[in-house]
Length: 156
Image (cartoon, rainbow, N blue to C red; front, side, top):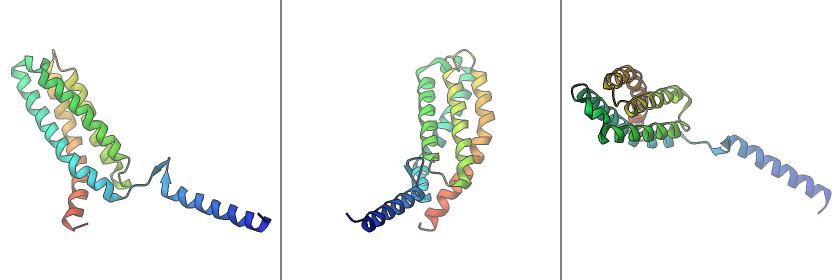
């Protein structure tokens, strides 16, 4: 290979590398807002249903403390951990404007799931944590839901 071809090949490789660097971040392909939207379209209703189930079970456990130690509470705790992990994973594709909302939503779910896991013996603590975390969760969920629903309403 002559030196001129070698330089052209190197230049082409450098250009390809630089173009790839703009498309990827931390070794992961950059996702479009559509990817985030699609993931959250299914995840937000699941998370909302979980929060509702946890809230009802926590309220019931105040009058029937044995519910805080039962299989249903353990399952709610496991589901919460799973949902929080899904929120964290999906949040890696969040548009910049929604990163803090996604993080808040995941953090609230994590805290509620941890409280559910340790509710046996003191269900009042769980009820307090759910009440405290719900406001941050709801504010974050509303911002994300507006983003998701606006796109689907406009046909994007």
